Length: 247
Image (cartoon, rainbow, N blue to C red; front, top):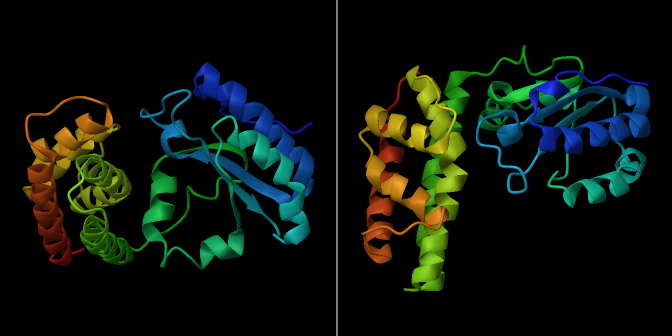
């Protein structure tokens, strides 16, 4: 029977979910499995049992339709327990994709736990110039998306609040990576990341912290419409600063 490693480093609830899932993955795919890692919030401080998703990277020697089909039942059962559909990749795919998905691969590399097999992420080399370019693209693309969705929803407080919350959540990986490009240490939680971002880029940290409070169901003093206008301004400002970064 295959042996898993680092399982004891997860909390009890996550461990009870991850262990049988990964063992079943190994049973299904056998020697085709080269590596299994848990990445994202489940490997860090932000994981909340019952609320946070569990992200799994499975590196296979080959990926074809029969291999995917064999995994359907396991993936369906895992989704009911908070394990989203695993990221299936081959070594060749990883080797040739760090230039087009540098943020995603660096996010995995900086926050993961190896569960089985070869530690592929540890030695992964990612060009800082590619990270800066993708961060700029995601910030500016996110700003365009904010404009478009607001035009669709109109002045509806609930939807505008959700729009800001979702936007901020999607930009958290970008915030972490532009802080890395600055040479800053990366805090293990979102409030800490926002505080560091505010210091490094002169961004209105209080505004972003208030959006986090909205996500947690807390009340804030500023009105939603005013917050949204300020948020647009800060994201635009950040995009300009990232464009000017030298790496």
